[in-house]
Image (cartoon, rainbow, N blue to C red; front, side, top):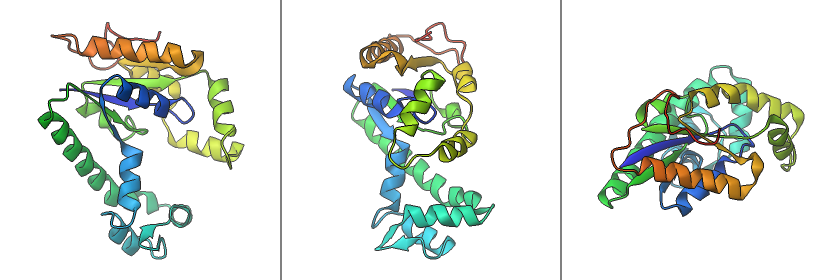
Length: 212
């Protein structure tokens, strides 16, 4: 089974691209969705986060607003959060990949916003970076309900710059030219990696790079 890592900065169209891979037949594992399950009632992260950050659990689930407030009050809070959540997310990923292999799936796509930042690119066969022009990205994000310039800039500071992501990519999907163009790029990537004998030259040097 080929495993692709899918990543991209906020507003680049990663979620839409993820759905395109699913439509092309790939099993898609979504890191954000996995976290939502962990925070929901009965989720494995609810108890540990309630102990680590008193007051963030409301109605048997993690209240994201209260958690964000707790993280903002303590410089070491993110490290404590990651120490709890990351192993649980990794277990979710491993379980879903094992099921995909048992089902005979040929392609799995791991949708991980902070793929490079967390070192996740080391355990995938190739990395797909979703990108768009900076002006398009900014407009998409600022059109979101409740988004501000300050919040947008704060999010960008926590993410690897888009130019660096593109430099390290094995494949690139540019969503700035419409859905149809992006979908064609996704189809080309799927066809490439499922070609018998395909092997990626890791580190952004693949001769099969797309979208450039």
